[in-house]
Length: 90
Picture: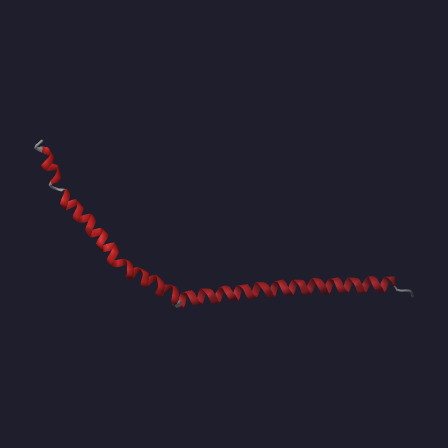
C-alpha cells in the first residue's frame, strides 16, 4: 500500500516531459510548414544547374536519335535508288 504513492511521485515529471515534447511539436509545426513552402517555391542554383544539365542531355539524346533516323532514311533511299537503277530497262 505504501509503494503505490511512491510509484506515483515521478509521474508528474514524466508527464511534463511528454507535454513539453508535444508543445514543442505544436510550436515548431508552422515554422516547418513555412520552410517546406519556401523550399518548394524557390529553386537553388544547384537545382537550376541540375535541371539545365538534364535538359541539355535530353536535347542531345533527341538530336542523336534524329541523326540516326535521318541516316537510316538516307540509306533506305540510296538502296531504293540503286534497286530502281538495276530494275530499269537499258
